[in-house]
Image 1 (tube, rainbow, N blue to C red):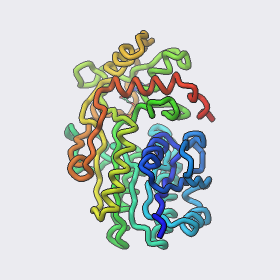
Image 2 (image 1 turned 180 degrees about the horizontal axis):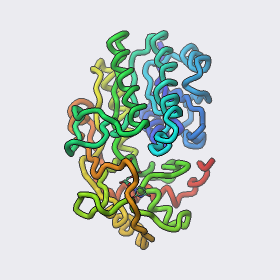
Image 3 (image 1 turned 90 degrees about the vertical axis):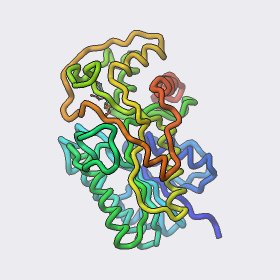
Length: 334
Ligand code: UDP
């Protein structure tokens, strides 16, 4: 019998496309479902991947995918990620990130597919009560984006009880970097993330970087985050699949390095890696930013055998810079 395929929803997005490449390199059979609203067709590089253009909230498209392919597992990325937008337009987030995946889950239930890897987020924790964050920390998001993901986590747990779905919820900290060969990388529109925004201030696409707040209770007054390389995230999804396909239990795992880096330290790293002076402006705090978000990644190591390979933020900056100067950058712009 042919090997069942892995369905990757949102496989044309930033983390999705890096994961897809990793899974393809491992020789896995892959089907991508992407509506290309934010994903980029050009980010799907490997031959032999079946690409279905469609929305995971469209019952006809999803049913067709499950009828035409034997799907053994789902890795679900397709989601909106802009925290500020989620505050302004919560229904957009609850629709796309929480409601539409129900169509996918219903198809899984109908077709007896019981393995699910979720692209989740550290935003499910909200304002941290203690650092580093462990998975048992209270789940109290402070914005609709975090809630939209947390609700989906809960839905997965309930499906586990009801019909035996097994899931791994991967709670990412700050995804960063690129494939490193210049072929795929981070290309959001609009770009809100710190590392690409600092780099855009060097390429001339932005005139400066604004540091959001210098009066936080941290050693240099700027916010501390845990920057995790996108290829390390990609590898974690493969390990999560192995865990579940090998009969492992449902679990939620943080994916971070455990290393906290401040906004000022990111700017220093950019100057060191590029040899260029970053034009910086010091501004007001951005609403909703906790002072520190740093993962305790030990559960991922214990259960999935995963550990970040890159822990020095200069490596993340270097690979983001490679992408930004590569020939492909810009072809993702929509
Ligand atoms: N940040 C900043 N200037 C920017 C973008 C981000 O100072 O133009 C800060 C932001 O306040 C946060 C950190 O950089 O403390 C990381 O922000 P990002 O949006 O990359 O990720 P988040 O931690 O919000 O998921």
